[in-house]
Length: 190
Image (cartoon, rainbow, N blue to C red; front, top):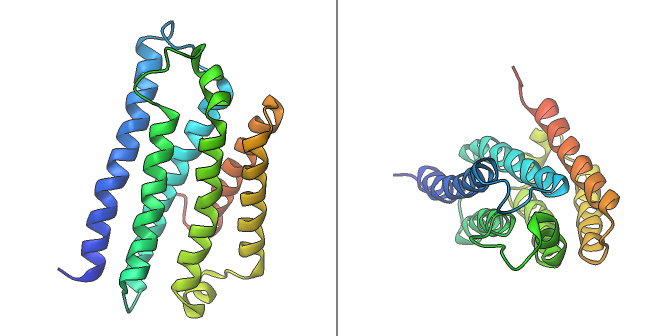
């Protein structure tokens, strides 16, 4: 088995867990809506994380172009998916009885959630940088990519402190829209 196949297999295991965690959480909301009241902003983040996971998994197929794997590069990629795993677990924990539905839970745990989301952007930038200038040039990635990663990190760090519903909803919409724009720009949607 080559390094790419091994890496892709490991990523697949973790990503499958992430998607399963989100599916279990959404299905619990459908089956038992009165137990834990759904919250629209929370669901926007669930959709964003789901879309980002699926896009990440699709995007990482390009790892087959990496000519030389190092343990550090492998570790960075694994760390990235571990962050997704933690985010999915935070979005749908086993029990939220001590909170008043998902709204109360969301704002009580926003510091953890947004701190982890904020870390994903520098990890993404490091991953991209480590793959080299040729890789970045082949994707058409330039300075605007790194500026966006910095801006999104900052906006998520602000979200750890701000409990404004509009801010959280607009941030989820912005990041979801950006992910959709990347999908349209770098992949054939249909």
